Length: 430
Image (cartoon, rainbow, N blue to C red; front, side):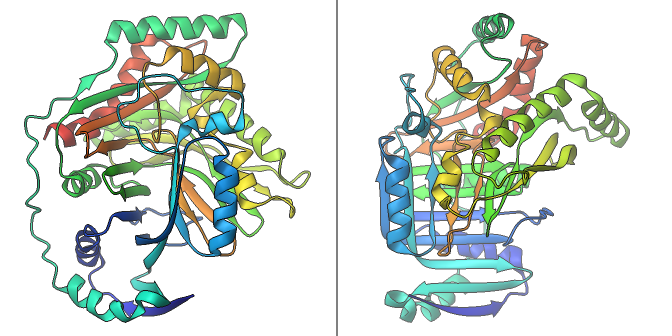
């Protein structure tokens, strides 16, 4: 059982910094922040979950069954992630590419301490076993310094591509040959950039936030495994029987010149290739959701609407469906996982082909981070625009991808990847 307390906070940005710094003493941390972006379907402005009372860590084998049982057993809030390679639990697929990070395929924990932000109010929930610590914790948070972090300096960190530009172009040509043969008609192809060295995870996350201010930001820690995410994309949300998916397909860089920025935005919205990519993924999501939705309830609320973020413009669509009452929360995820925006269509064929062509295991990249509520609701992002770090092995990784269709120009797809990686590389190379 949990006990709760509400506090009014005058300076939310200051309190967030103090709270996240205070949280670093715990082995398990999940920080989800909307960065004050206007999100029609968000329940909270930010959430912090720390200190595992119980946890679940698995490989891909029977992972979703174990997650279902774990959620039922706890009957509580659980926070964690689903790796992309859980696809192998759902279909006859495999993952054999190089893995420099070696994270578990799935990790969730039941936090002892929770902080929910909404409209200037912070609701704190502690398990009964630690409730007596709340007042002391609040004093510690209040007294935490907000000055510049004195962390590990990583000025010499040099990010290297796993693929050369020419190798990337050659692989895209091979992928296009599959499209021309009719094996698939779209696939999301990803490439990794990496470095060996130490970073300060919290300082790196703060720098990333300053550059991006995304609506689905994540700071995640499981002992020595870190995710620092500036994701702009929601994968799937369940609220009662309502399901909401908001895939992104279509990207353009932003400009500091207002006129040029408007032209970039309008050109993206008018680009037939980008709109076609978005429609393909919308159709894929509609098909996934129709497997678990009440008949006739799947609707497209927004089709390739344009959203502007600090670094890029995106085309985002919103698909809604009414979940059939006999379908569990975890089964609702299974029906559409991995998300269509990170795979391709037809989904299974696309996943087989990109596994054969990509050179790195995706792992948590293009997976999902989020939470389940005690009553079976959930909200999960898409892990993109993210830095992954194994502090134990000093391995730093970031991956980016783009949707490949018959009309794709390999050189332009490579440029799109560099646009998406720009903020991440800037943060890491200082």
